[in-house]
Image (cartoon, rainbow over all chains, first blue to last red; front, side, top):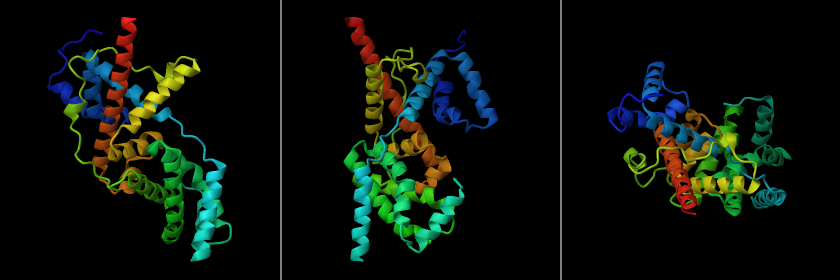
Length: 86
Length: 203
């Protein structure tokens, strides 16, 4: 793909603020088409968008450990104590 | 918002504090709230405190809820508050909003994407563990007011409206903080991989 403009101008900066909405599919069709058009022309913005997409995907893939059984028991005990003292 | 018939039955039992209702409440939501606390706090004991505060507080206050489908968003509201209190201040407002200019790629940043594609990671468990460690650190380094939005939107998959309701923020503020949080994570990861790349180049 051949870039037709120099990266870093006002177009790129304006687009920078919209990238999360673009990734989330929250832009209206006109704005979305505007981003698509810009991406076709600007290799640096394409690279940036891809790095942001990867970062978001990494975050979304992170898993927390399961609730330990002893934590659950402690909470049930705390509730029983609170109930007994009220 | 989630809808299921079991929520209505459980809420009816919670309203009258029926025997076993709290146990059922913990069994139903405990794992989810603990995971949320872990993602935000990063420490088991902190996540345990968040879980305990959330479940005990929400169980009492939930009796006032009119609609069962509001249970989850109410729980997240209480849990988010517990998380932010855990990180002191208890404020949902950052000390200052971070400007987008601070998150633009630097002039010296290599244009090549350095962050590995999560869909094409190596099978080596040690490499994967190292990548995950870096992602957890990038999330943990975020200011709490940004981190809570990122965790709720990108990890818990809540909608923008649900996050706005839980944190008492405008939709525009949720979007703004989510975008900045993502940009900060990207910047941290990109810098980390770029440093690795340079180090390998010197070997």
